[in-house]
Each structure stands twice: as structure tokens, then as C-alpha cells.
Image (tube, rainbow over all chains, first blue to last red; front, side, top):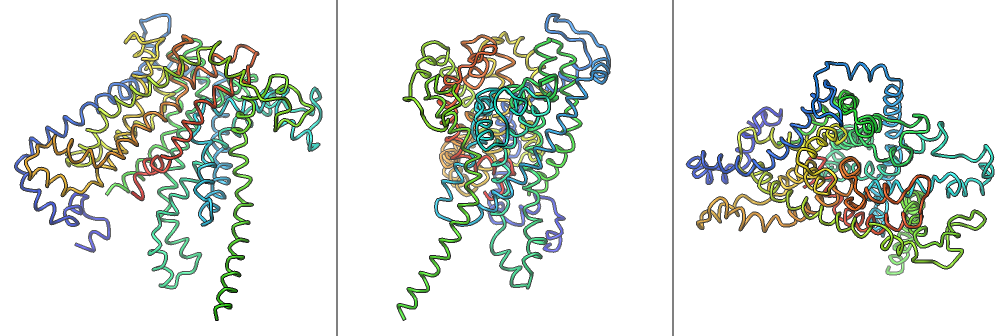
Amino acid sequence: MTTASLSGGPEPTARAAVVSLPASARSRVWFQSQTSRRLAFGYLLLAPAALYVLLLVGAPFLFSLYLAVSDANVGEPVAHFIGLENFRSAWEMDTFWIALQNSVVFLVVAAIFKSLLGTSLAFLLLQEFPGKKLIRGLVVIPFTLPVAISVLAWKWMYDSQFSVINWVLSRLGLIGQFGTDAWPIWLGDPHLALAACIAVNVWRTFPFSAIVLLAGFTSVPLEVLDAAKVDGCSFFQRFRHVVAPMIFPILMIGFLFDTVFTLSDLSVVYLLTQGGPANASKILPVLAYQIGIQAGNLGRGAAIALFLVPLLAPAMFLFLRNLRRREY
Amino acid sequence: MSTRLAERSLALRQKDRRRYLLIYAGLTPFVIIALFPIYWMLITAFKQDPDLYRMENIPFWFNMAPTLRHFKILFFQTNYGAWIINTMTIAVWVAIITLVTAVPAGYALARLRLPGGENIGISVFMTYLVPPIILFLPLSRVVATLGLQDSWWALVVVYPTFTIPFGTWLLMGFFKTVPMEMEEAARVDGCGQLSALVRVVLPVSLPGVLTSVIFAFTLSMQDFLYGLAFVAPGDQKPVPVGVPTELIRGDVFFWGSIMAAALLVGLPVAILYNFFLDKFIQGITGGVGK
């Protein structure tokens, strides 16, 4: 039995039964005698949540598949099936490819910076020092502030004329005077707009990376580390064979979670630049919103939004696998 | 003997102090980066307009007397008051809907060993990860069919799509930690299934229930897309949508009022969320370190 459970063999239920034998022996009597009542009660309790989610997430998701193959429009209530026409026309749109490319660049560049910043911050917060709680609380504020609200602060900091960032850079002699070419207009320059949006995303989410990493580190029990030390493991070996495997699933989940929310978030770009200037910072969610709601072309908007699915699918799949592995 | 000990502890303390200084030095840039935009909001909200739009002075402090004018404009010349009321009302409704559905669902999934329960639990949580950008177009049809377009009721219907999955997942974790024996004792004393839940499990899980209420509120506040897409009339918006869409008119920006509006609601939400951040992280990482 022990070898089987070490190799992860038995069913979760079987293992639970082994672990809590006395408790389940006592409760088995009424659990067995009232099985059907218990099940009915259980599904009854589950029903409201399940129905809500099925009706307002499941059905709309299927409906978006239908919209994507129809010519649904805001003006016309009746939609016709038009096959893959929406996908084809998106495929032939220059803006779509720009948006797709920007989305990928956004995701990758932001991920690099937030993991660098997040890791350094996590290592600092791992130490013990006075005032740790307070500093940790202050540093995570960017993540906890509602996104639409913090983006406004950045829009003001990126102001074309009264940007405080430019004021500092100008006093340091790094950029020129207002009105010259050497005065960067962060949100109006095609070369800077996307970078400016990425910076806001990094600012908002690096505390999240740090906290997830911290949660990972603190989940490694000290006894395990001590045991490894007693067994003669070096620092590097302990990290490689004990810490890394234990925190990897948590890191993965945090990383995938962030991928999903970074790829599908429109608020940062929409509020800062609306995708401009001249599509320089357009990403897929903004394009889907502009075509679906502002231009009223529901079908094509849904098709563009669905292009996010293949980008998200690997992340979701890994997420699911990790979740399942933890679930015993 | 005692002097040697004292010397040693002094040396230790000095070593500690040096270590602390290094850590603080390392943390300073992070704290500045994290907090500067918020400080900038704060000072902008209280600066007079001429002080905001002048580049000669050092902008980090008041060059003219602070003013409350921006707040007055906000409350007397915009719909800000209405947005706050909308935000709070939406939050209350979303919290109620979340509790009524997620508490029983979380309990059933954690306790009743339903066949397929584990898979149902995971799929409920996965729905939390279906991004709004994929759902907002079909949901706009749903909202229109229900006749709720152009009212904040649309958001009451839509926000539970992410608060229910998250709340259910969170409560599942909480209910799993309540000892089975407590419930069994209640049943031996003659409680039915439902009253065992209401009288024994719920009171013990009150922190969990409270946590999911807080998240119903803070996660609703993080939304921008649904509010932008479903609520057009100026007086029906919640704060995070109203401020950026109504206070910016064309190229005219009322930066003082915008920052005042953003802070007044944003900061309390951020602080509240701060206290529950660890629960959020535990929630998404699958209840690690419960």
C-alpha cells in the first residue's frame, strides 16, 4: 500500500480512505444509508451556481462561436450563417496582423520585465527585517488598485506637455526641451506608444509576480530543507532538487494566470492610446472591441476575439494539468 | 563574562543593522516605482490648476496653496455622487448573488463527495479564466434581450460570471478545513443536513464567507470592459468606468478632478484588497499553504 501511494498509484478516494480511516468508518453508515438523499441534496446545492455559470459563461461562449460564423450586426436582429467569412476577412486585414503581432510583443516583453522585477523583489521580501509587512503592503498597491483608475494616473504622467517623467528626464539632461524633437511624446509617438503601455502593465503586475514567488518559497517546509541538509545536499543541490520542484507548480500557475489576463486585457491600451497612433499600439482585445461594439459588427468582432483562444489554449491546458496534480 | 556577551550582542546588532540597511536600500527603488504614480495622483488632486500646468517649478510639492476645488467640481458638476452609489449598489447585489450560489456550491463540492465533483470543481474554476473579451459580445446580446442595456443592472447580471467561480473555489478550500467531526456531532444531536450546514459549518467558515464577499466587491471594481460595453448613460456608470469615460471630454482633461475621483474610490479598494491579497493568491494557486 505504501509503495503504491508513494508512486501516486491509488485513486484519490482510496487514498483519502486510507488516511482518514476512523472518521470514514463512523460516517460510512449514514453516508451509505442516505446515499441517494445525500446526492440529491448535493446536486441541489450545486445547481444555482452551475446554472448561472452555464447560462452566462457556457452558453455565451458557444454563442460567440455562432456569432463568429454569422453576419450578426448591432442594427439587424436576424443573423445569417456565412461560414468562415469573418475569419477570412480578419485574416486579410492588415490591422489584424498588426494587432496580433503587438499582442505577442506585449505579452513577451512584459513577461520578461515583470519576472525580473518580481524575482528581485521576492528575494528581498524573503528576508526578515523590521517593517516587512508594511513595505510588502505598500509595494503591492499597484496590483490592488482598480486598473481603470491607476491607468489614469499614468495617462497624466505621460501627458504630452506636462509629463512629470519628461520633467525629470529633462532636468537630468537626458532629453531636450518641450517643443523640440528631443521631447518624447509617450502616447503620441508610434515608436513609444506600445512601450509606454507595456510599462504600465509591468508596473501593475510585477508585485503579483513577486507575491506568487514568495508564496512558492514559503510553501517549502523548513523541515524538508533541513532534512536535505542533514543528508549532505549542497545549497545548489537543495535548490535544484528540493526547492525548484516544489515551487514550480505554483510559479507555473501564477505565470499562466498572468498570461491569460495580460493577453485579454484591453483597459490599459484602450485608456492610454485606444490603439493609436495609427495602430502602433493596437492589440487584439482593443481591435475586437472597436469592431464589435464601436463599428457594430458583432460577427467579425467575435471572430477576432476568438483568435485569442489558440494563444490562450496552451496556457489553459498547462494550468489545468497543474491544478489537477495538486488536487489530492 | 557579561561584558563579553554584551560585546557580542552589540556586534550582532551592528551586523543586523548593516543587513537591514542593505535590504532597505534594495527595496527603496521598488517602493518608489510602486508608489510614485499614487503620490502623483494625490498631489495632483489638491493642486490649483495654474500650479499643475507650469513647468518651471519643482512639481513634486505645492507651489501654490492646496485646494479642494477639484473635489467640489466632482461632486457638484459631475455624476460622481451617482457613480459612487451605483458602484456600491452593484457591489451589494453582486455579493448577495455570489453568496447565495457559491456557499452551497462550495459546500457541496468540498463535503458531499459527489460523483464527478472534482471535475465540476475544476471546471467551475476554469470558467473564471475565460476572458471577458471573448464573452462580452455574446453577453451584450443577453443584456439586450433582458432589456438591461443602458442600466447598471446589466453589470449586476454579468459580474457574477467571474465572482461565482472564484467564490466557489475559495469557499471549497475553506469548507475542506472544517473538521468533519463537528458536522457529524451536529448530526448525532439530531440536525438535518441543511441545519448542520447552517448552524455548524457556516459559523465556523465565517472568515471564508467574508473573504468571498470582499472579493465579490474588489473583483467587480477591477472590471472595465463590461462597464464600458454595456452601460452608456452617464449617470448609470460605476466609478471605474465613469471617471475615464465621462471626465475626459475630447482633448480637454480635468486632471485635478480626474485624480481626485480616481483616488477617492481607488485607494480604499486597494487597501481593502491588500488585506485579502494572500487569500487571493492562495485561491489561484489551488489552496497551497492553507
